[in-house]
Image 1: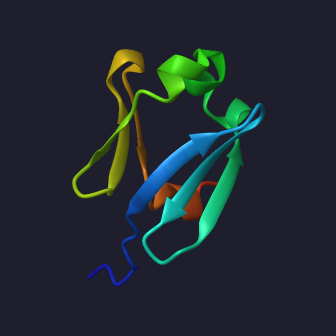
Image 2: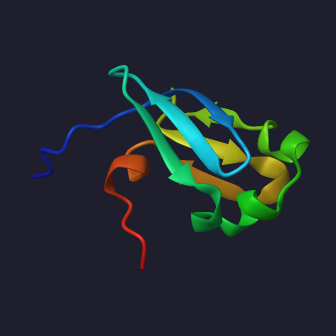
Length: 79
């Protein structure tokens, strides 16, 4: 049985080097864009053209064929 909490994304934004996600518990998590090569190479317009899927459980960039989970921002470890 999985007892890990599930977080959802409220909003997403970017600066020159990072992606930021505001979670449903109010925390803001920032990760380097270079961890996400498709987003890193995308234009600002492409990055900002996302949708929150499953009430915010995932973030989808249809044009880039990229999906990220909100939970992943708290559990991602760089290889």
